Image (tube, rainbow, N blue to C red; front, side):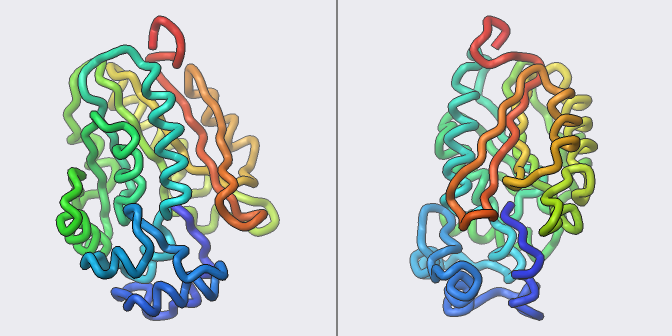
Length: 258
């Protein structure tokens, strides 16, 4: 998710409240010079607001907007397409938030099932209503990521796609960039939980990065995968772009074991 702590401060108490359309557009204009910045589910703010979609202040700041979520979804689908058939893929987002990233991943990976976990009750309630209003086939569960993953049932050999983007908190520094070992919770622990729980599955992890991410924290993750690649997307102002670390376990894209 696109997380900029300083932008949360602009919303003050509204970070925990549902925003009016003018507030969403004002946030985009003041923070990024674009009133349509918070485009989600393939719609500009005025369009999704007219459809009954609503966002809390914190979700407007933290959600992965369309330009980035679309690019991530395309790259995930491109890698997943090289896996040998094994039934419908399952896409899981342990920190689902608005659900927009899940929407774009399944938009490009059309035969996949999708489930997201969201622990924050207010975020969950608003996001679930949004998904229902848009009639999107995404299951959203009010549970923490570890409980959600432990209860997830998937047959052996099935391709599991996990989008890993926990809150960055103090892990992002304007001087040092992003340290994936300091996210809340640390990314390494989430990946280890996925590798342990789904050892019988083919796993594709997509871990959200900042363009300036601590190299040691990246290397600690790539060592856990059989194959990995990094993509950075030029969709934000210079110095504020995001990307993903794609990593697989149980298969290698393009090889016979895929």
